[in-house]
Length: 186
Length: 72
Image 1 (cartoon, rainbow over the protein chains, first blue to last red):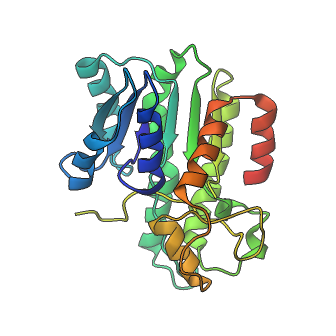
Image 2: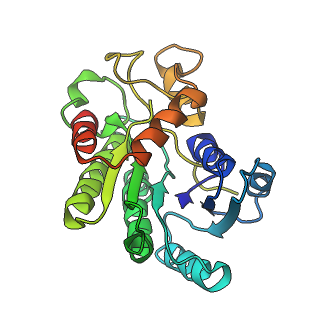
């Protein structure tokens, strides 16, 4: 299961797993009617694989849980082996000038969003017998240790990634049956 | 319409400071690359995705601890 799968790394990951055989791949998107969402149905399918699309907005407190309910009631999917939290935003500004609302939005989308997804998908991950994994597409921008090396104004983004790096590590150690990891994709 | 940019892409630093990190050629990664005077990010999606998939596909404790050190 993936969020949010419209473009970039999300779409490319979706395409990869759909192209493999016997994968049920769930794409979480903000707008089920968006042209880019509709185009996902054109991606090549491996033998026995299929795509399910559900609505998940990272900032919604109810979308992820509703999507899981839909997965179980409409698609008979009650187990997830892999969940990837992929949605994210990035705007640049010096911290002295960044609008507080923008800082809050980065934390809400990039750090709280994956936790919403984790809480909603956890029961289905727990039913997996295939080493369940919860991965977050994160960034070294969230490294406290590396921060002095980069004189770039990504304070809000980096703070949100530092937050989700920590939360993902806590998820990993609080759930001994689960492998949870943040990834830097570059 | 979207209230924030669609989907993620993460940024890295190979072109800026440390060759072990790179930007990926996505909306977010390319935008970051332009800040340091490059036309695009260095890493293609075709290069990035197999790496992500390999890390997600092998839940080996030692590998993960190693990656934790790298990422955090």
